[in-house]
Image (tube, rainbow, N blue to C red; front, top):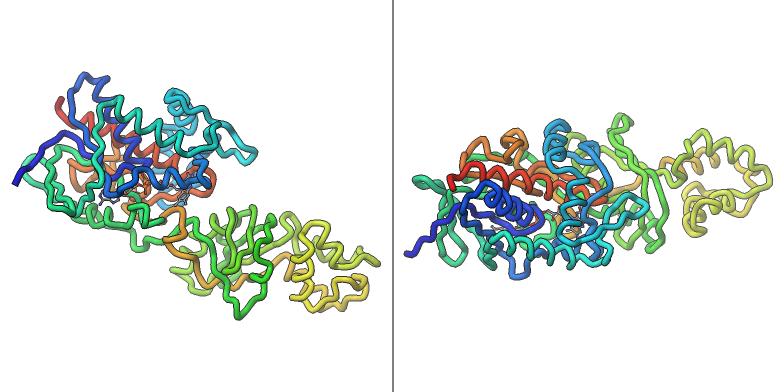
Length: 421
Ligand SMILES: Cc1cc2nc3c(=O)[nH]c(=O)nc-3n(C[C@H](O)[C@H](O)[C@H](O)COP(=O)(O)OP(=O)(O)OC[C@H]3O[C@@H](n4cnc5c(N)ncnc54)[C@H](O)[C@@H]3O)c2cc1C
């Protein structure tokens, strides 16, 4: 059996793996080390997730951010990694690769070409310039420590030994792209544990159609405030943003952002609920006052001032209120029901649409098992980890890529500093 030996192998050539490869290539050059760096990927198509990101435009990063934009590991740990390769560093990095970024009103940064291909091509070109070899499809099936190296075996029986391995296999979101969770088994084989829950983040939410007719408004989008509440009524999380009603339930930035918070809350409390305020900024009290002051105005018109007509009508239906009758004619109970339907609607969420439709993974390798200045494993000296395989997930807006760039940068540099040139 022929066994190849190399200095650094990166498993997974997605966003984090490509950044780790570039960072390693540059660090080796700067340190005057002559190292053989290989990035392996199991997929036939490289960078599938970069290409589909941001609707094909690739939301590369955000104008700024901090651990508050992420969930999973401790804020201190996340900030430490983000500081080492910041949001500004990302913008500069891509500019130097010839990818000019533009800022949208939400703070998201996209390539000016509006094409994710620009981003992927720039990363692959830079890998080439840094003498990184990319082999694919080369799916790593197993990993084991041997004397002085780690031995990787592929699904076709090939073997590769490496002095250092960077695990950048991603999580489980969009499994057809190649990130199907095998990376967790590889991490476990080298002594890591995985968080008790690994679950979809940024996933659309399904509603119980037996309990609500909301899905009949499919295609309708409106800003809304979504709140995750414990069974005690305690607010656990709140987000405001565009909410899209679909044939299965809810999609768009706000429902997707809130999905992992609801799922996490339900691990502890199966009755944790999602409550929707269709009138962001309005409280039950302020809307009640508005109805009281409305006199001859109708609830339908009042709601329609801020909401699409069909949604305004649907809200009135929930409270058994005639949208066209003067508000002054409503009973106290009708007013109470209307206030609740408009500002505190309990969405009957049965769950999310799973990894196939999720944009990220919550859970993974805990950050406290990693040295954060090099992303080196605390369980296996020869291993470094970066990207979505770690227990960090960001909200919508370019934060998941930022995590891939920051952690990938550290892992590449860290691996080089640990290898003799
Ligand atoms: C539809 C969609 C849209 C998104 N849009 C955005 C966006 O606009 N902005 C943003 O910030 N984030 C976005 N994300 C999230 C972002 O794409 C991911 O967080 C990010 O790509 C994670 O990078 P990664 O390198 O850690 O993992 P991945 O990108 O998943 O890459 C992992 C790579 O490892 C390979 N691999 C896995 N196992 C093995 C193995 N055993 N052997 C060899 N190779 C292996 C896979 O083939 C894959 O290429 C989006 C995600 C999805 C699904």
